[in-house]
Image (cartoon, rainbow, N blue to C red):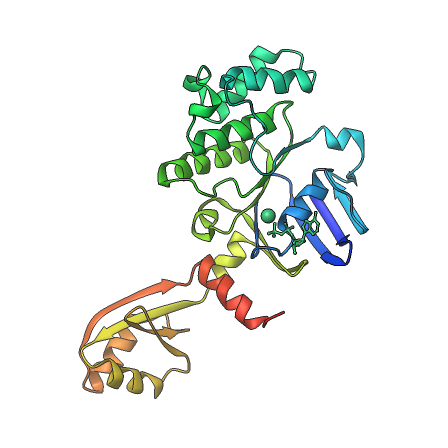
Length: 299
Ligand SMILES: Nc1ncnc2c1ncn2[C@@H]1O[C@H](COP(=O)(O)OP(=O)(O)O)[C@@H](O)[C@H]1O
Ligand SMILES: [Mg+2]
């Protein structure tokens, strides 16, 4: 079963077509990285999944049922934009309020559980306003976790976090997924997303242009050999005589499709070039994304 299955989703805001037939499939237990430039429709899609706004057309199924189904709604926890908290209340009291809103039966026990999950056990007594941005984002996730949802929808949760905040967030999300929860997380910080996502969806102009698993990304990411030598121009010309895709990037000449550095060293040596440095590497999510955007053109 899929946690989220969306078909031909459309959403109009007056004249503005925010979603133009979006398809999306999110498997249970995945960390699904939802990627796209500003205004591409990520938040709109997430708000529909969370039942905050309604589609103009198309189908949205969560755990095999229509997204409006009451059983299904109880399975979804949300953090879209900043958590609605009282600045002068403690973290604990903010969570107590939310627990009361949700009519949660054992609020103390539940709150202790979610605070532990987001690594905030020690900060329950802090006033919300004195918490760092990273802590506030985790309080938001703790709130979303009240009621034990199976699907968490997080809109840009790592925006603005420092390195430490990102690391803790990464641990929290990986830990939640290892407990069987499904996480839909939008972000444009691709380097971070790449460390945790098991699946990706790339949206552009209200349409899904690519969905893939992390394994597929890994396989699809072109490997290359990067070389430096004293005379870069001559080296490049010589390499172009044998290999079809050569690019200069960050002070290296990249030979795409080549996986054997020895062969390149030998070939260059035979042509009078001594290699100063050579390494094999892969393009990551960031470059993959930029290349895909170029490939798909301006629309
Ligand atoms: N309430 C709204 N009224 C009018 N236009 C909206 C509204 N919400 C979003 N949009 C528009 O829909 C498009 C998609 O927005 P959004 O889903 O917020 O994108 P993202 O989250 O990917 O940045 C944008 O062009 C945005 O201006
Ligand atoms: Mg957004």
